[in-house]
Image (cartoon, rainbow, N blue to C red; front, side):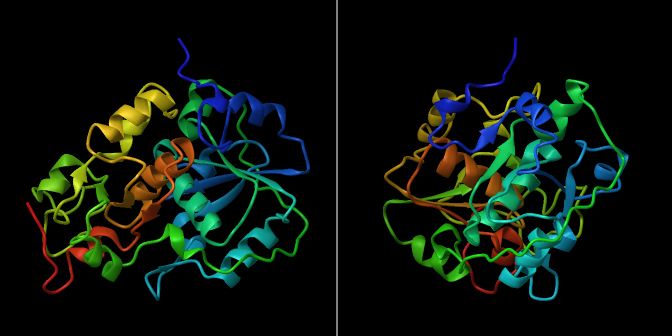
Length: 287
């Protein structure tokens, strides 16, 4: 039994199938992008034919300012990969698309249109034994002009602090249960991404990001199942929702689900997340 949902069940047309991607590999108006945390373990071992690489650490972040890529940096990244404003961008990646969802958030922050996620990401593509390539493609340079940042989809530390005392706000902690309780400061795979203190932001509910996807193939769960997942924890469309994790990538996956698959009108990603909150002096926490 396939977990591939009908694409029209979601609030927005932002996911596509592996089948569609394979059928459109040679379309010059489509650019497939693999987004990886570790390209050596993933992209370099074989990727969707014709796909370009966005390296999460190098391409989508500014390591000096602990910030996301700048507008100029994003324009350069898209331009050198042959992406224009008329290009259909299909993102996919490892970890059930959590880094692809982060790239989607980055692109929406700068107003990039025509972006979708390939449902199931690398996992589903490999499970279905679809074609792979080790060739690094090259496309003619384009000029891309991004928009000014859309601050309505991003939350900052002070805004989160103010939200602690405001009714109608839902804070969603998408980390693992042991991170939420403070039992662990960081997962063993990412020992450097920890904070001085463990726990969670006061009032936050624990809904691990992975609960939004099917274990078998990494595809998103159906809309009704997702609605129950979040509403059962009090995270409803009438709330101002702020999602966070440790460094903002897992929470961008939940942001994507809430905003685009379920159509919640007010959802922000707190990308400073626990590495900022847990290291800040005098900010309250719960265990």
